[in-house]
Amino acid sequence: MVMALKKKPVTGMKDILPQEMEIRDYLIGLIKETYKGFGFQSMETPCVEHIENLCSKQGGDNEKLIFKIMKRGEKLKIDEAKEENDLADSGLRYDLTVPLARYYSAHANELPSPFKALQIGSVWRADRPQRGRFRQFTQCDIDILGEESALSEIELILATTAVLGKIDFKNFTVCINDRNILKAMASYSGFKEEDYDEVFIVLDKMDKIGREGVAAELQEMGYARESVECYLGLFDETPADVSGIRYLKEKLGDHLDAATSDRMEQIISSVEAAKECEFSVRFDPTMVRGQSYYTGTIFEIRMDEFGGSVAGGGRYDKMIGKFTGQDTPACGFSIGFERIVMLLLESGYQVPGKQDKKAYLLDKKLPKEAVLKVLDRAKEDRGQGYQVLTVHMKKNKKFQKEQLAEEGYQEIIDCYADVIEKW
Image (cartoon, rainbow, N blue to C red; front, side, top):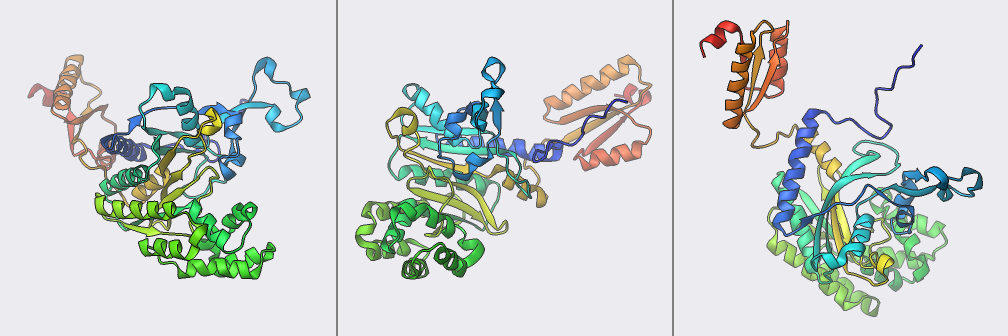
């Protein structure tokens, strides 16, 4: 007996049906059009990266989720392998940022400076699947490489919010922070530099376990009660706007470089003045963002009705230097494409400006000449901008028409020989 092949996709992957695909295609077109309007240029990298690049301790927890690819042929020496990486020489990319850094390092002399990159593609993470989260998903990234001024952050935020505005999203908030502010607050509170990353991991849970939960966890880890209280007190006292940045600039003194606070003020005030749709901007000193490659400004877009972020990014000025030996200013923003598609599907979103749809139902007894007449008429309709379907008539014509109507066909024409003769 032959075993039946499996119909379901691999765990964490999904098949995409036409209704969703229509929204995805529309979104990608809108994203590209909007980003190109801001001067970003499309580029592409392979989905497979060198394992050394993926495991370079820049991707945080994502490096634990790599789909590794085994060596092939003579290079695969299973008997001699001592650890997992002895068997793998490459892997599926877990984001688009590490591949972009490699790409720029290899092609910098052929690219404009600064380089405004637009990349859309699939990425893979061996994560635990859940609502809105899959092991294969699409990322839409824009990055500005070679520009050290705050203009990078300002343009990235303006371009990304412009996309969301065109999809008619409202009630969203751009949250912004800086890794240097996080470090200055920790230093002021008495934490040692080598403990910063550990402290930030706990701080990042603030929205889940609250202030008291963060305090308890830090004290359980052995940190002094005075340092913990001083640290959390700073967050209690800091307003969530430009005045909060000014407050910390004065409060933290020499612990915080004045250039960092000035840059933050410039970004927030510029975005508020130049934004193309309605949203709020909030300074969030508790925001950490997990990737260890961030070196300065970090930001997220949070959607009130979603209860989570739909875009995130920041500055990563040290990553390209890992490839070239010379640091290059870099800043990027990534849209959570899958989450946005999910929100649109759940809200019954209809793609605007869709073509009118017309269907011709052909009687199976039609002679060849009549079929050619129908095909010629369908060609004329397409020339006038219609989306046209020609299909044989089914026995249950009523049910067939109901299905076509659900798919958006406004005009359904029965094609019998006597009808076609009158055309």
